[in-house]
Image 1 (cartoon, rainbow, N blue to C red):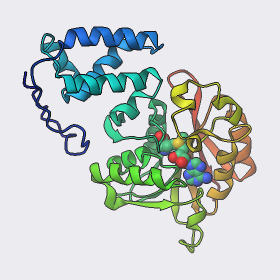
Image 2 (image 1 turned 180 degrees about the vertical axis):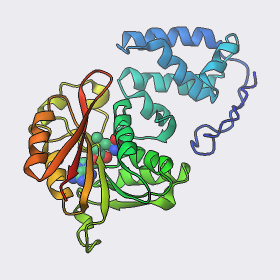
Image 3 (image 1 turned 180 degrees about the horizontal axis):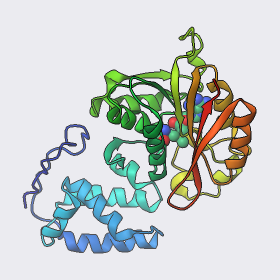
Image 4 (image 1 turned 90 degrees about the horizontal axis):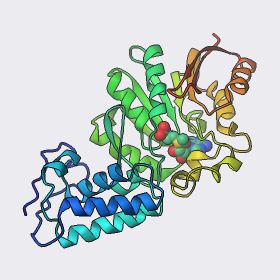
Length: 310
Ligand SMILES: C[S@@+](CC[C@H](N)C(=O)[O-])C[C@H]1O[C@@H](n2cnc3c(N)ncnc32)[C@H](O)[C@@H]1O
């Protein structure tokens, strides 16, 4: 069997998706998938069939849809072994996105590894809010950029903005830079290692930022252990842990943000379940006007927008 390579724009970017020519001699795709579905199901994976298909398509370097047209084709032994190794990792609850090295966000592909949080669909509400408030040649800071998903989507959607993408984790910044280069927006994003906005005080003599966006760590330290192992064991603690009530970074951002924001500048923050009241109070105490609160698809208040009084 010869495995056809997808004409895929991601191939150059995701090095694992390179040429793969199979040799005849293994078991058919259909049988392998059936067995793998059983293995993942036993391990408690919620959508075992779908995940088995994604992983097999990944090792074969074809699209998932293509599997269905090749049902009876045999998978080479070496590919089968690679697939089994990934299945075993998934059965130990390592997230699928880390295994295939990518996750889609805002309909774009992002490289991810264990140094960064896997982008979540609810974070797209941060992008939507920013698009409602930011116009023209604005300066935006994305604090805790992780994979760079927020900064990169905003750079693509708002061609005149300049974005400062900061993270305290150097390893996360390496991933964010790669993603920015892939999406061809690196020239409009300045990457900085910084504890929140602390690196900006010596850089700017005046307050120049129009909008501060952030999906900071906002889970309480105690809650982390109660989350699924995909999160609690595999995602970076630094990306999750918001201290005793989850609000450590959020509170600091509201206060320290004033040091970089223009008068009338906005803060757009992702938040966790039940954090709305405390954040509204914090914004008001710090001299902001809360303009909007956006609920996510589950009806949970997820994004808060506030304007610094002029
Ligand atoms: C919840 S993740 C968000 C990642 C990405 N923006 C997203 O939406 O998927 C939070 C990020 O904040 C970073 N972080 C945590 N504490 C920080 C701090 N004090 N200063 C800057 N970044 C911080 C973490 O390294 C992590 O990348």
